[in-house]
Length: 146
Picture 1 (cartoon, rainbow, N blue to C red):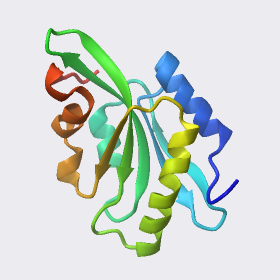
Picture 2 (cartoon, one colour):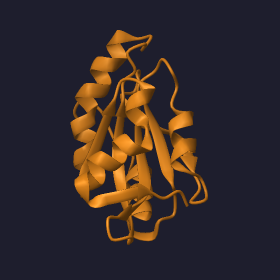
Picture 3 (cartoon, rainbow, N blue to C red):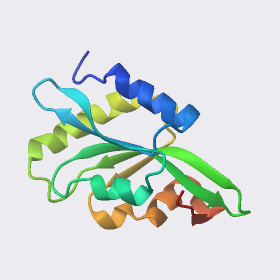
Picture 4 (tube, rainbow, N blue to C red):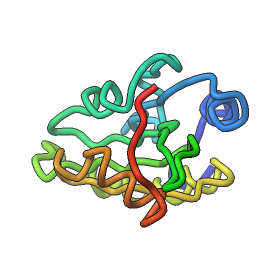
């Protein structure tokens, strides 16, 4: 309960991403009336990070979960589930920004084991290189797109 609720279905999808790599990404919004986190879109494993970034609306906040693939500096393929908090500067509803910020911690608590979070307010902050920096720091050589 509390401020906003997270559906079990989303928690299951997250587990499926983490354990079995069943999805490339999930995009979520918040139903402002019921205060429930709602799954809006999902990308099959064949989808790319670019597909995810393109699916984020220009003027509305969203959460995203992405199975992000990259190579380590010694060339080993890796993947991590990354949590995205998209609050564009051009957001057309200031109240929603506030609600998304409030619900974020509750959502992350429900999604156990999220180690990486990317907060972006403009598209330039969504480039694969920026995500790579966050996830792999200096250990990575290149992004791989599956």
